[in-house]
Structures are given as C-alpha cells and as structure tokens.
Length: 281
Image (spheres, rainbow, N blue to C red):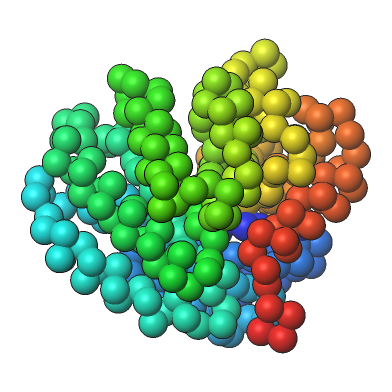
C-alpha cells in the first residue's frame, strides 16, 4: 500500500510522529507522500521526507492560501509560488500539491468572486511550475454549498485549456468527491487519477459516492488517508494516520467485489507509475 496523501507534519502528530510512521510501515504501508498545503507545510514535508527513506513530499499552496482579502496582485501570487521552486527541485519531491480550487466557505460568508479569481491565478501559476519541473499535480477541489459542481467545472476548464492539455499532464484529484456526471467526463481524458480517503467508509449503499467508485476503473485509483483528517470507520472521529489506509483499501475491495490483494497490487502500481519515485532517493 502507498498512502499518497498525508499530513504527518501536522501538530496533531507532535507527540508520536515517529510511532505513527512505524505503525504504518509495520502494517504494510510501503511509501507515504507528505503533502504541503502552505509554504511552511511544504518546508516541513521536504524535511520529513529527508529524514525517512520511504517518505516522499509534495509541495504546494492550498487554494485557501489565496483567499486573503478580496484583491491579490498577480505579482504577489507569482512571488508566493516562486518560493516553492527551490523546494520542488528537491529529489524527494514527487508532485506539486495540494493545489486547486476550493469554493466552500467554513465561515458562512461565502467565497467572493475576487477570491475565486485569486485561487484560479494561484492554481495556474502552480500548474506552470509543475510543467516546468515535469512533476504531476495533486488537485484539491471542493465545490460551494450552493453549487456542487462549480469548482470542479472551473478546475476542468483550467487544466483542459490549450496550454494544459489533459493528456500532457498527470493529475490526481485527491479526496475525490465529484459527481457521477463529472466523473464520466473526466474518465474520457488521459492521465487523470482519483484518490480516496476514509470518508468513503461513511457512504451509504446506493449513494452517488458509491456509484462514482463503481464507475472509476481500479486502474485509475490510488489510496490516501489525508491524515490527520477523515479517519475511516471504525476510527471515525479519531485522529487519522497512515496505517488506516488499509481500511480505504478494504472498502474499495468491498464496493468492487474483488480481493483486497488485487486492490493493493493495482493501486500501488498506479502510484508508482504516477509519482515516479526515485529508487535511490
């Protein structure tokens, strides 16, 4: 198993980070990708990867990093993204992420049109960095409360633009929550993968999220925890950790009606091919 999206640098692991890592490897996890959501988190991710041979890093700026105020000059955004460049050249960095669009507001005030524009500018700038360094991207995408498709459609429009032709860029939608209709559209494109977290264990039989999982071929799937968030059943409500990626594997096997060994073999192969881990890193 490979946990393709974790946040082991989070302060929730300050008391037992090394123990959580050891539990994961003892439980069958082969590799972990620690993912940055801001500049400091990206720095910590690279540091963590440097200390552990089987931990790798992704560096990026979460879309909410671009929500400060209603106006953010393009030059300022380019400066922010520019700070990722040296980090991204580290040999343990395997992706630019998590990047994308998030139109969901936790405050109830909504994401303004200006903030959406800032997010889009930051997303495009980071796609440019990924293209420059020939790295895949890990996409964070969350729609608004009132429109379950808006952010997904905007992400699709950006990465499907002429300079970001989908078949020329490896992209993974992390913690995927798109609709069945959107999923079918994305499946027609090449080099687009989907990774799933413990929240799939909350889904009810017959729900759209289950139908989405059924529609996506296993050859386009990867596993993740997004720890310390979204702990799977039977640990729901607790702190999540990389060892719990096994529950995600088991749920996919259940939905697909196949063995956990088959899910393990194919999703691990998908991740190895997608992220192109350096064997001598």
